[in-house]
Structures are given as structure tokens and as C-alpha cells.
Length: 254
Image 1: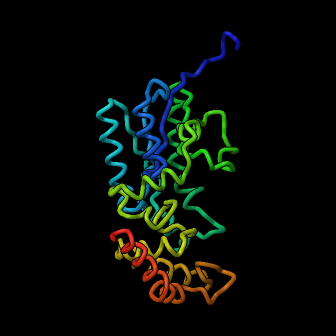
Image 2 (image 1 turned 60 degrees about the horizontal axis):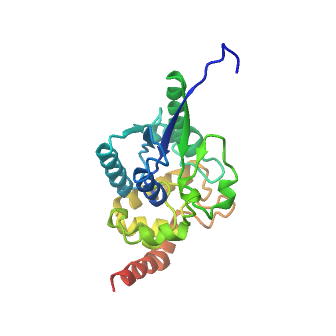
């Protein structure tokens, strides 16, 4: 390093979504701060998070306060609904996921620029498990994976998550959690939404119907197959997936 080259100060941040892996990871870090130094915790606060995610994030923040750890929430520069309107009142699609590239990633850009302005180089704790091989292979020099380092698998965290009331039964049905109106939602995830958060489900159906109308009648689920439109989805939910998920939830009560 030359005499005139500025050395950035390293900082260590846990990046938390509020899902099962990030909560488990944060608990692990907070109980092993000698091994995993922690400058702070950062959460990208999205308008389309599940309500239970908001509760998880509030809990995470309270735990950080107990440990004297800084907790930062960063919102996208442009709201989801402004972006929805700017794109002709259309939801993101599996092919055009502006919900990630434009909406969510603006949070990461804000945080990166903040760290640079402070003369810091941020290292990120990310909640990838030991068996997520393909995702681990995409590691960058500033990524740290405590769960993988401790040889913790996704199935072991899933078993734990099923017992945690804060997740509102989500992981009794589903393995992973994204945004509520994600174009990549599985049928089970949509059915869970219909049962647990019916107002959000009705809003999602309304948004899909509007998107299909503004897309010239192309089906939201699969634009190549117009028969899989919103009416098909509603029928599919009512006749198959909602009853199926209700039964699965009941099985946990017995």
C-alpha cells in the first residue's frame, strides 16, 4: 500500500431480512460476539413484507438494544406503489423483477454509499446455511456466512422455526419467505396468505387482475399460457390449495 493510499476501516454488519435464517444467525452472533464482531445490524424495510416479518424485525431491534448494538432500517428511495404506478399499474413479473433490481437494491446502494462516506469497508454477515452450496459459491470478499461456518443446515433451522410463534405458522407450511406480492410465490405461499392474511390476499388478487388487464390479458402466473389467469388462480386456491394448507395447519394442532 502506498503512503497516499487511504485504508478503509472494517465494519461488520448483520444483514437481516426477518426470515428464519437471519433471526437464527443474529441470535448466534449475539451469543458469540468474541468470534463474530458486530458493528451493527441492517434491515431493508419493505412495504410488502409479511406482517409477521415486521414483528420479527421489532424483536431483533430490541435484542440489539439489550446488547448495545446499533440497528439500522433503510427504506427504498422510491416506494413500491410509486414504482407500480410508474410501470403502468403492473406488478413485477418473473421475467422483469423490478421489485429487486430497482426497489430493494436501492437500499443496499444507500448503505454502501453511507459506509464509504464514513471511510469504512463493510463486511456482511449473511444467513446462508451449510447446505446452500450454489449460493455459497457466489461469495464475495466481504461476505461472511456464520451459519455455514458452524455447519448449520437449512433443515435444522426449519425444524426450529416451526416451533417459534413469532413466525405466525409460516414455516409449518413453507420453507422460505420472500415478499408478499412476489411474482415467484408458490401456490402454498399464496394459500397461506389467503388463510392468515385475507386482506392482503384480496389485495394481491386485485393487483394481479389489474396487471393482467394492463398487460393485454397476459396471465400473471405464466404469460405464455393465458388460461392460467387470475380467475384460474382463484379457483385453484379455493378448490385445492386453501383446503390443503388448512389441513396441514390442523395437523400441527393435533
